[in-house]
Length: 334
Image 1 (cartoon, rainbow, N blue to C red):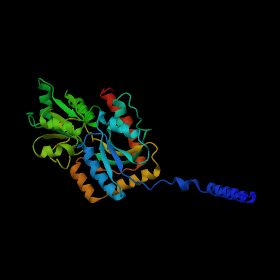
Image 2: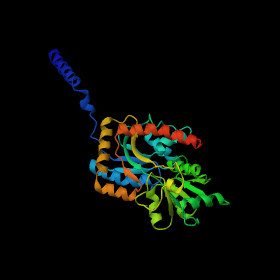
Image 3: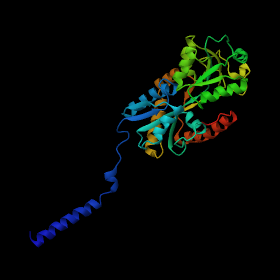
Image 4: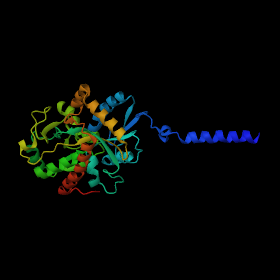
């Protein structure tokens, strides 16, 4: 090869390299359109609970709108801590999300050594549902029909009257202990691993009473397997118009509207992904068919759809509020 040819070849190579250097960096690093694959929503409680019943039809509608499958993955344990921890450690790419209840803001005050920070390690996306109150339900074997009769019976009983919850430190536990405090009773707490096992224990008579979301107890109340004696909301539940609220039966300062359900991603989730998911939540909750399904299957809750900023404020406020409530009830972290 001549010196002239070699020089021309060197010039061509240098020119090509210069051209490559001028290609915009973003061209080779464009993110794929979101979502481009299946999205996983972790529900950190057992299947069949109120949260699970709400999230499954909601994510199905969202998935159809987004053109991708959204699968619900139940990871129960430690009042939601196990599943929540998985999302805290997940990549912030929008493909691993968390649907959770207000136990999310309770757990920092209930459990020592939690490996995640509920404020710093998550991105609030949307409020999904808001609770309006809990039903106080008893097993038919108890020879009582009203709250007043229950209180009198509990105080005279030679053995403890047990109540079930889905675990320690959740809103159901708090509501039950508030009742103990307000009514002067000493019901015995029996925690279970999830709402469904807690409900099954009540239906089977392993425990005698529970204060639970209406959605999961309603079928058993209607079938006569459980008796509803009070509601903790600020007004009577439309599905149980004959069941009084606590103030009507002499238990004062016992308005407890239950819990919320919300959607989170790991910390660092991009605004574009958050906005897309939030808009899909709002769009899904506006569908009449889904709203009817939620009204039937998740009784005691109303659709929310609060935006990320508003939902984030609620989370921060509730961390403080529930910490103060637990201290007043003398429920200590374990």
